[in-house]
Image (cartoon, rainbow, N blue to C red; front, side, top):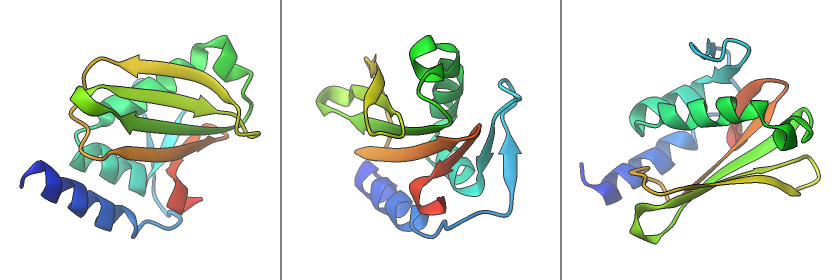
Length: 124
């Protein structure tokens, strides 16, 4: 499957996740859980690193101050770089991290972290 096909496949499949009945506990950051949709994304896109980053950044003061509702967005730029941002519940960007390289197959993904649970926006 080439990159375009992979992106189309993921986009199509991710639309099917609405709510969840199964949660997964992160092996390193045991406080956090994530949904079936996030598990699918991590597995199919090879992006477990993204959950690692989101949960790992929770120790930063500016993110802790964001509150219980956070919107995380990964945007892939030209040249296979990316920007990961965190917004608080008021849609203010409170944190930005630049990645010098990524092979993430989608141009953009947005997820919510609510009360220590990471979910796709469609699962909210």
